[in-house]
Each structure stands twice: as structure tokens, then as C-alpha cells.
Length: 308
Image (cartoon, rainbow, N blue to C red; front, side, top):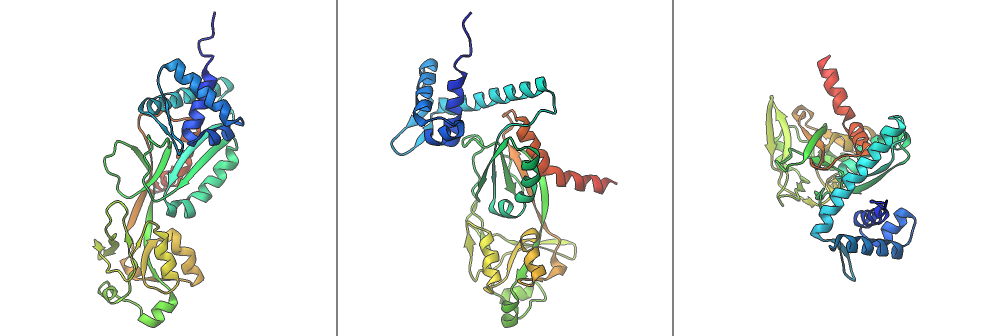
């Protein structure tokens, strides 16, 4: 009796190349050589009678058939991983790879203390972290998860809230000594404001306040406007160039050190949500599910406390 799946090594080679973006990077991941993977993919394409990779001198891309095949074999390998863990017992060590994309704010300030215990608990899980303010295409770019900010459009993605992040208005002591300290929302019109331009719209993001129980979205007039990297407004504010609104988790330590001063606390209370999202049709590996639970544990704990 011939072996039906004796080509799985070639499939694994294709998946490594597709997910790492090159034969060289795939070879490093599998501890082999690029030429070995190239031959494996060529054999697989001959077996399937279809081209999976589009090779040029400058880049490597997936054909439409290759994209569909990658998604299907990722699901198949996740099922094999799950079956192996079932056979070994649920206490077996988690293994595998998780590709996660997060915005710069979360990647620098929120994610590290969450990933640290996860990495210690699951040392055999490889996390590939992409830190960018660009909304990646989870399916086309092969990401398992992404953290997204704000109210999510009806994109077909499955979302679980990670947290509601409080906002804070701040400026440097040097700026306030020179320009004075605003006492009301109207006072802000006479100050140098440092707004952020939303990459999705190309427009300045409104500052969010709560005044007398009412939500107020206030559009700042820019002294300097920042695009692409929202952390830039905090850097400018630290150096005395004006006032910015940022997340409390970014500026809290700077406020406590005296590098920044919180302004108009009576207008605080607004938050923006962060959520972890994934494609609905993709079967999640045990490693992906475990990371989702870590990312959403704070939200679950807050909800439980609210119900006590």
C-alpha cells in the first residue's frame, strides 16, 4: 500500500516559504537551505498541477491558488497539532507559531508585560510580532491575530475587546510656564495643539472629552500636526512644543516623573477601545487561542469585578 501523504514535507516547505516571504527566511525557520525548499515547492506545484508561488528577481508572491492553498494547509496543520495534543493529553506543551500585528502604542506600552508571562509559560510557541500603524490584511498577509483601535467597521472579522483605554491631556512644565495653563476647553484655542492625522481618513483626529456628563469631540487647530506615528505627539509635547492628548497608559509615568503635567482633569473620562481580531473562517491553533485568552484576561477580570 502506497503512502497517501508522503508529500507533507513539501507542503511544510511551501508553508514556511509563504509565511516567511522568501526561500531564505523559510530555510532559516526549518533549519535547511533555500535550494532544498525551492526543489520541494517545485515538486509540490508539479503534483498539484498549479503554480503556487510567483517568483521574480525582486520579490516572491503567492498566486491566487497559492493563497487559497496556504489557508487550507494552515488549517490542516493546526488540526494535526490539535490531534497530537489530544493524544498526548491536554497538559502537553503548547507548540507552534502565532503571527500578531499591533499598533505602535500597544506594541511599546501594553503588549510587553502581557507577552512576558506568556513566553515563560509557553517557551515552545514562536510569536512573530509586527508593530505598525497600518491595518494589515490578516488573510492575505497570513496573520493569525491583530489588535485594532476604535470602533471596528463591519469587516467580517471576529473581535474581542482587550480594554477601554483612558485618554489624557498633557503638556510639559516648560510650555506651561511660557504659555500658561488652560483652565477651560475654550482656553485651548489660544494654545499650541499637537493633533494626530488619522491614516485611515487623512484628517485630524478630534480630541475626546466629557463635560458635565456629555461627550464632547473637540477639533484642535494644529501648531504641528503629526502623521503615521501617534507617539510623535507625546515626544513633541515632552519637549515643550505644545499640548497633546494621548492614552493614560503612555503618559502616566511621564506625569508621575514630572516630565508632563495633566491638564483639564475635570474633562477626563473618555476612553477608546482596543480589540483583538481574527478571520472567522480560520481554525485557530491551541497557541493562538492561548494568546487570545492572555490578551483579553484584563477585560474578563474587569467584567467579573463589575458583576460582583
